[in-house]
Image (cartoon, rainbow, N blue to C red; front, side, top):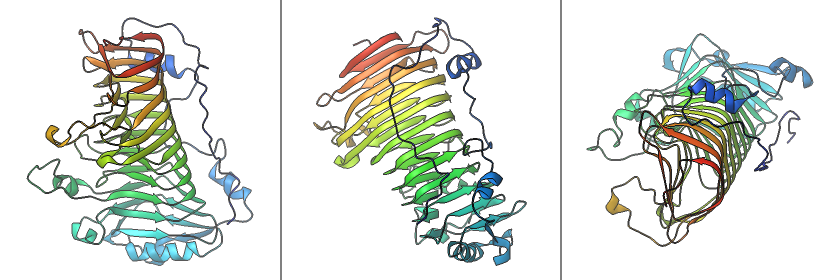
Length: 439
């Protein structure tokens, strides 16, 4: 299949010591000043700006021969009047996918309700889905009886662009109310991910707002060459398991200029993922930016070449976190967190190799662990909402190795003194670090 020449494949590199640090301050500064010091000449995270560098969509269209065929969902029966429009979207997809160079248009000014639906490839040629209106999930939970794990699923679609100024709304309130994490008396059952891309190659998702997912908002699973650009992802702070962007078994990923505030991780990166770069991220509320959890149920996990660069994390329960279960195997290696501002974050820097989200008796001590190595924290500043600004809780049987801390300055929000606890960790490099490890 022809691959569009505009797609940029990002290959990771780790220049560990390339950044020159400015002066450090003993006392906390306003967040805006932290931001300016760390970001320097880089743009602040923004939403709804252009992508593909300086090229506009018109430039990209004109760079290809001829104009795309416009497939408007309204022409296939979509009403946007509160009724189910799933059939119209299915017909529009079938037409566009079988056409040469098509664009599916979801017009602005209307709300289109959809039941769970899978849009399958391969398609005849590169395809664009332009969402300018709102797509909203069916409110009837019975519509998900056949598949409680997915709402909108794009499967096996290569050379695919999803963009627009519209909104994807998971209509998640009813799902949250029926979650065992909200009501302990209810059984724990899965809830749909709002948007899933599965086994897609050369994929761009840009300029959209995703809100109120039933569970996770946006998942890339078993994909290759992915760009997630200029996205805004929002859900209430108390909405359970509503991760913003979830990366699993996916390689060569750029996440850039995204504003994410949900009830769980802003970005979560799990097993099978490598060459992932997240930059210019605004995160909060939520659980921060996480690698893991890894190794659940004594499983093997492999994550490598992850870089988080230029992030503002505010009011979250964690900042930058690596979390692994006891009993797992495999590795999390070659990871860098740099140029990060923390604002009132409960656990700004944390590695937890004893992670457990169950009752303590359900997580007995085990001998094996996912190996964590070659992790760099560079130019990270701000305020901690808890005493433990830095916490490395690593495994006795498989200590964290080659951990570097270069230019880290975290102070306690308020008047208390920030501390650092470091269990079973082997530090490789340490320069201008506050607070220092207590063990």
